[in-house]
Length: 153
Length: 136
Image (cartoon, rainbow over the protein chains, first blue to last red):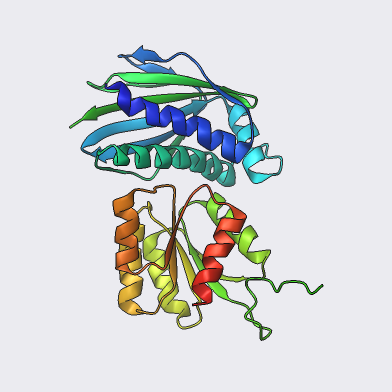
């Protein structure tokens, strides 16, 4: 996977989280995974179709998700209910939207699918024939892993 | 010093009526809070494009403004915009999306959207864009 695909996702993750959560956000070392990757409690997945295809996954522990959701709603939310799901999905949506806008400015043409959410313990994700790059983002509300698996069609 | 009238106030004791079309309950909540704080009346909400078109027809001509998401299940935002404009060429529709791709923004405006807001949503940005549409 070309590194120029991942940078817009990393940059937009940092900028969107700083902007909407008002917190300090630090990017950590990128790692490459070519087999099944275990995922944490909550994963928002957004598909990309077109000249570049694949998916982007935002993965985090439930406690981290609830802290982010509470901050975005300006009220304490302790249950992972419909509003909570919509809130964390919207975070993924905004990050992906900004990254896709940047990639589009770089000349790549593609569309995004509506986000889906997975919640549960001991899940893993396998991407046939696409290697995934994982960028951990450390924040004061917890750690989020951005898992990007894209390829040119 | 006189206080500014709420943006949702027509100035005759009635308030602008808005239809919100978005598949995210978070965005519906966020927009409702912003608009209701300025006295707009949320006349209806829809969670996909198909429902949005139905609601527009159901409440027509009592809708002053529509906010419409782009990426939605069933019927996407651009198709929803086209269908509402086909039904009512004077519809005031503002597109709201996390996607700011130039071709998409152009397509929305050519199709008939009055404005396009790229998320994250900011209270001042939302209100100033809406105000400029309603005052035209």
